Length: 204
Image (cartoon, rainbow, N blue to C red; front, top):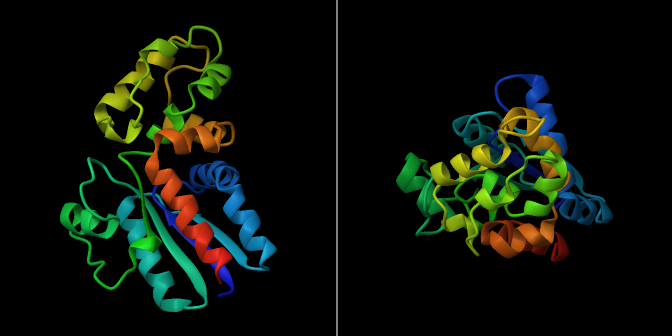
């Protein structure tokens, strides 16, 4: 292997918004990036906008470059009761029969679960009038419904100077501030991402 490429959902429709999210996620995934670079691997992180666009880019890359570890990272959009590939095949109708589960990763149920996991970083970022007590207190944030999580995050932040949480305006900054270990404690999917892709680098 000579590289690692991750194709992820998110970033909106514009080049600037995709670049902003990529910058934030690049910082959050820095341990993987550093491990890849230590092996003299190429590192590539692509924010594709919609989930279908992410799948299409992932499949094209899998076919085009067998020398790279190529991974997909998308929201689950709901509870997950099966493997990542089986979940996406059942929910979205995606044909992933020939793809290893180790290459398909879910931000269960949504990326905001990872952000909400670090309430301390959120409080520092939003400052005065941030209502931490309105955030979900579940030990496993991935069990919290996507709609419930979005509502809680909006209510906790809407009175702050930055205004209510907005994925395009705020997610990149927050991804550069949240603590990975804190996120991993509340979000098993995040742990799986780091452990699975990290193992691929270490054993190459």
